[in-house]
Structures are given as C-alpha cells and as structure tokens.
Image (cartoon, rainbow, N blue to C red; front, top):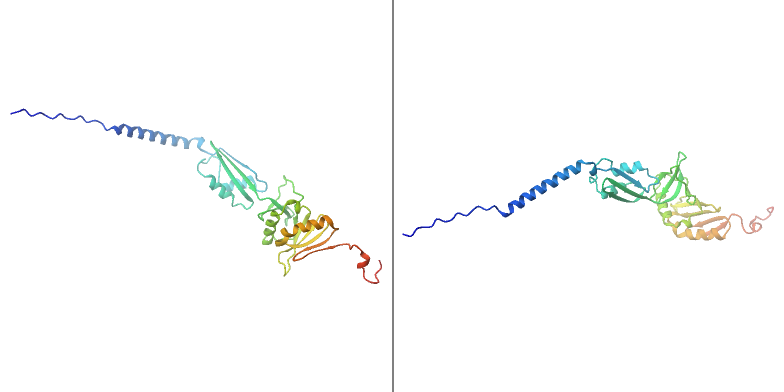
Length: 255
C-alpha cells in the first residue's frame, strides 16, 4: 500500500492590518493626550479682549454683554454668538469679532450715527442716534454743533424715533442750519413739528414730509429774509418784517 503523506500544517501568519490598528490606536491616544494638555494649558484660554469703535456705549457694558471673560476657553464661544449678543444693544449698528490665536479676541463695533441732541430731565446732554436711542454724551467727547436739539419731547414718544430715522437719511449739509425741533401735533397733522434755524427762521412741517421738503427749506433760507416757512400740503413763506411795512399798516395807524 502506498504511504499516505501527512499534510503540512500552515503557519499562522498575523493579519497584515493588525499592526496598522495598533499604530492608529497609539496615534489616537497621542492626539487625545495632546488635546487634554492643550485645554489645560494657558494657550487655550482668553488672555486679552480688545474692544474698539464705541463712543456712547461703555467698554464694560459691551464686555458684559459679549459674555466673554479673560481666562475662559478661547474656543468656548463662536464669533457669531458674540455678534448676536452685542447686536441686541440698540446703539450698536454693526459688530465684527476677530479671534486671534493664541488668546486674543478683537471686537470692533460701529454705533448708529448721531442725528440730534436733547437735554435730559436732569440737565444732562443726551445724543439721539439714528436708531432712536437716547444716550448720555460722555464728558470726554465733543458735541457736533451742526446737529439740532430736540426739546419738549417725551422719552417714550414713538414719533421721536421716526424723526431720528428721517434725520439720518437727510444729508448733513441740509440740516446744519436747524437748531431746534419741537413736537407740534394737530388733529390734521399728528406728526407735525416746529423747527427753528440758526438763521432765525421758524418752520412748520411734519416728520413724514421733512425729507421731501428740506431742499425747499434751504432754498428759502439762502435767498430770503428771516420769516415763517410752512411746509405742509403747500409751501408758503411769510417774512417777519414785510417788504413795505407801511402798506401792511392799518388805516389811520401812525407810521
């Protein structure tokens, strides 16, 4: 009988991907270790917060509203979150947040422009922004003399906010002569206002008509003597002193 051959036993070879798995696990552990060390180090924390562009809003107010604090995690809050918080302040128009690694966050704000001023009940000067917000003018900044003063306005008057929006859209050169604006509502014109100019004119108009009528106002101021200008459905001008006082005098009156 022929001899039967014993089959050769195959050697157990390690799988090729076993070493790769080990390398991957070691690499992952290394990355986790680095992450733990990083977030425990000072490099992962906010070391400085810089705020620029604010005039009427204080730096401390903006810092508190931003929710940022030195020593907290640098990546704990996104720039979008900070912008959303600061935009809730009515005086703020735009915000940019620049996170500069490691540790520095630069916040640049732009407030709404000043369109007028008013005296508070306590005698303090307040700036009226284009958004209608009224803020105390810091003693450290100057006052724009070409802006009108709002007087006799109630703090919660919605017409004041509308007037602020209108003034913001009118070029500065068309409002520089306006010195004072007073509310003067009537049944026919609930948004009527009375204005006084530096050139000694009295002006009657409405908030809704002001932007369309302001060019006429400046034409009269440049060409006529001081008088009363009415800019409602029709535009009229009457000088305070008539061209010929004798003609306007009552019969029998002494000249």
